[in-house]
Length: 270
Length: 270
Image 1: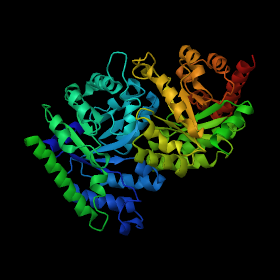
Image 2: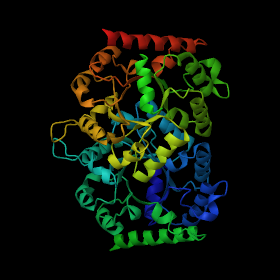
Image 3: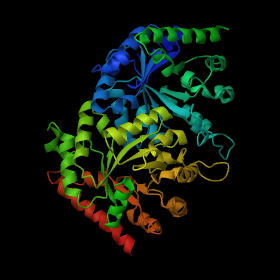
Image 4: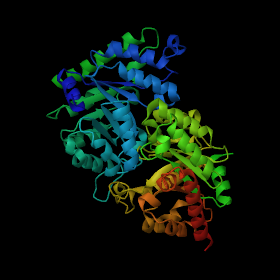
């Protein structure tokens, strides 16, 4: 099954929420902190309690890399317990010279066998193309991100009146020869989303910024539901995995996921 | 010693070349390929034969990450053998939401204890600021890169007539409150360098793109030598470490480094 098929299957089942495993040992429940595989143990319980309703899992590489070999080990073991029909996103935000991007693609798509990756567009087409060569994977390119700093460069006005991130959306559509591109577009920009939604074509979109970052889920879904094909993943990390800090954390995460996913479906059917 | 002091000390000793350890097991000499720590063994011999003349070592994380735990292990062991007075660059091209950039900063500056990092500016100030909080480190922000794709977004004209990468240079100067910022500027753009050199102020510059990527070392040095303070690292990776593919590779690398460094000094003293 290609990555796009995995995404579409889950969307067809009414599942739209991607669970973000940004697992920070400072934030996991106290009773797990001292166990040897604390990150893995936390992830395992979260996955068990969310697997029936998750559209995808996004693993933020920074949270694993910062522990060196120990963290990489727990990242690999976490990936092993995610069933193969569920899309995995390596949230790595890579992008480099062609020969280096080749190596990152090998790392994310072959070594870890992630289904998809997030990418920095700044260095242009040849920095992205080694990832695009993997036709069964998905490549989510950053466009308008959910943070304040999006105003510094992403939203800067170009000579032709467009904003930089809009040029990037256009380029990603051109680069989508293998039908394996997607966009990252932050939920904190509903006014812009309203204007940009027709630009997206049928590209899958990964929407972070709901919850901890302040984006409104309902508003975003109302706009996105105009598209013929949803091809949508709404990422929620902290809002799900740290919903409860007691021994009950996994159950609380599972319940929160259902609640959020129901909200999406209600907004869609309205 | 801060990262900037390490760089300046080497520059004061007439050393300007950064050796790029983009160690690819497909390209290392045949006799090393089958050894268990092939990357480490290769790096060790390269470091031994270049240490007297290297201004810095740049480790490209992609080439280690693609081997998973085994690669990370050899990255860590390589860092252990680089003397502490020589600047190390974690060529990671990171940049993410604040809480994620925090983790990447922890990974690169604390876990691996690199002296410096390369960063993607796309997501703006709050994606960079967690790195800037490490006042004794150096943060090389991508501006105009050496690849063809630089034309896609980096060189795009803004409403005010400037190019995007020039706006980034201005912003990096504003962000340099801790005197720990630098720029990555590709050697393949000598015409632009000529125009931009006065924009750089005293920011340290990391110049890739000489050799394998086609940039002219002499031309670049002629322009950069106009600055009061050099604060310069010219990175050469493939041109040094794969200069010779026989058992003689380390000696050849050491000789090539001397040759390149002499070229820089001749261009400077002319």
